[in-house]
Length: 175
Image 1 (cartoon, rainbow, N blue to C red):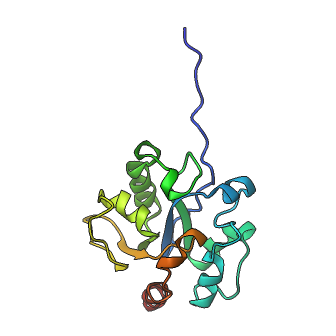
Image 2: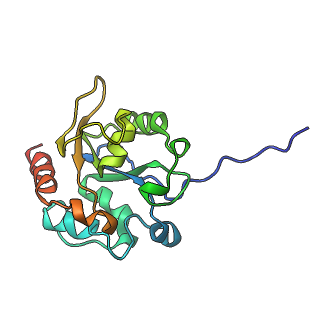
């Protein structure tokens, strides 16, 4: 008889209660975030500053306060939850799109925003060379509105643009 194996725990816990305005989905926890147990904890990541800059939070939260983001109507998850790492280190088998979709359908946010094109590409099943723009994403039946944002990761600085984040914040403030 084989020994039973426990399912591998998520690197970071989801923050997905019901009633959210939006869920922000990253690709995977970075190594610093994984080590600290907090979303967007890397020293070069501008996530928490951007949320405050765009008015999505009344002050700049620290990574250790990630659970309190739900108090502002925002949830957090990753599309690769079992392994940490930079986008370039992840393999196709690291992503769980069906689990992500199930989680989103359970918590029913108004909007799903991808923090970076990599997570959005994986979700849509797009290759690296297929076009994908920042801003509103292609709508899907029986799924919340989708928004694609520039990654806040320090390693994505050359693609940084605050404007799509401001557009996302305006969308949420209109609802």
